[in-house]
Image (tube, rainbow, N blue to C red):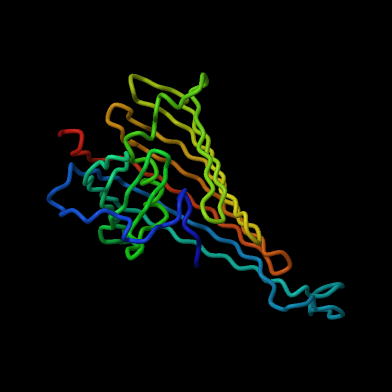
Length: 251
């Protein structure tokens, strides 16, 4: 099964754009999250260039095959993610090393990434960073919640055009109990080039504004691609994360 990473507001840039990697013992602290992840994919594909007409398959009453076939598959995993916070950059970016220890398939060594308050993420293109890791990375920058950006309804919006993708994300603070916030995200990413590729994301974020870290994330995303007569593909991603350890807060 192949699928495009979602929850990324910007394309990966060249490794040269990343700051020099810091040693693991120079971190500001470590965050550890439990995660669950699942993806289910359904594909409708045309097996022939043209409709097959005038053929009555065995067992059918009438009509013929249109050359379409249906395929499906799924993948699930659970485990832990470890984020070593390296430093904060002058431009507001947070440099981190993220790794994943899944029980089944998803296991990755540390990869260096820079995350920003506008949910942009830049990771070393020579390292593997899974979709569910991007789900966490998007909300790690300290200025993800910026009171100066809120309107009277405790809402803010991010709109970006990156390469051939147009992204619109809306955030609303549903509740705030002394800095413990519940935030709702509705994000849509649409391909602006040829063909149709759209990703719709709904996320519930438990966020500690005082520590500037997500406490929990529950993300449901649907991605749909339409190749016209050639077929279509629908993929559903579900990711949950919960913070279980935070040594950054002790410093």
